[in-house]
Length: 360
Length: 168
Image (cartoon, rainbow over all chains, first blue to last red):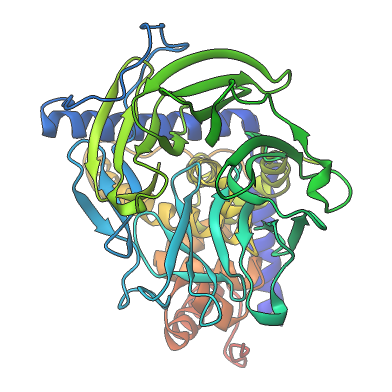
């Protein structure tokens, strides 16, 4: 009885408050959130610059082709990126190349660490890291761990996931599934895990023997651009494709081809540029290697803004779309032995070696 | 397919008033309540891709707002000590007398008891849920509810002598 009366009186006061509330437009709240994120990033970048005495340019071998002006003003690159270092997922300083902290440690997480091969993805808001630790037929799983550090949470216990990529809105994760015994998925295939519902949708070719390579989400999280290798082992060829993941069916045959690489060149990697409809593709050509930027809707080549002397891949734009991270090294070079670079639209800056599959 | 911003807007529209009402009871001041709720929604907006996947995003926003309310209350306490030496306080805005009584009674309680009372009576959480929400032991939640309930009943002139706090 008393509880009912207390509840009524408190509820009446709360109703009075709710009725008197004057909510600002939701857009204003979202804008405030965006501003805060930018401010935080700017302060962090300014601090990093102040601490390191500015950016250091060293040993450039990825010289940009004729200094085409950047499409947008150049901001500061993210202060850190994510990479596999010594078998663990690490946060690495962009300026100094030093490991700031490790995100996967046996004592801090429940994840089976160090037995298999890591693959990981960083959410666009740089809040969450998704990673898989793959040791086919022994253990599997996709995990989530805060970028700032903390315990890992197993999101999908059964997935043997290779090459994770999270959509920019953070709602979907795509990976190449690896199978074990009778449970092996059809190959080649992509699995799209809906992070809100936990449901997985498998996209596959029914009979073809191609090998699927790197993939990247469109900014709206709807399209997936991916590479495909085909031909004989002596002469491996490649193409880039575009798949509408919201369309009907689960066949990769529904994909549309992206413009073929320049004559004699092969597609190595691709990355969607945040905030634009553009797709950047790295191509390995007979005498040089180049970055080709295409206008996705028309598939038209817009520019070839970067030439690199070595084979380069591992493309990843920062959330502003102004800074590109990539690695150089022969395709047979282990990931951890490749050199990591960043490119700000006008110059390539060497970060260092020993960072496998860097992303930011 | 609804966009991420549509999703946030719908969530915001559905829960803003309710949360302001609850924080209004905790803080006793509408402006302060709106401030902390807006701050909590701003934080939710910056990490919406993650918050939206939670089982109860509103609970997350409420917890942020309540944490923020603690800060506000601590600051208000300091300001009150300073203001009491300078000038009389401002008159509260016009409200029905029973609402004024409830707010005045709540204001006399420690902030920790107000949180428990609001979560239990307004949000209708069980004692276990209140404890989980506030990340405090179940026994602590129960003792805070018992004391808060008794103090509130006395302040409002309600008799609780023959009743026990119902169990979760």
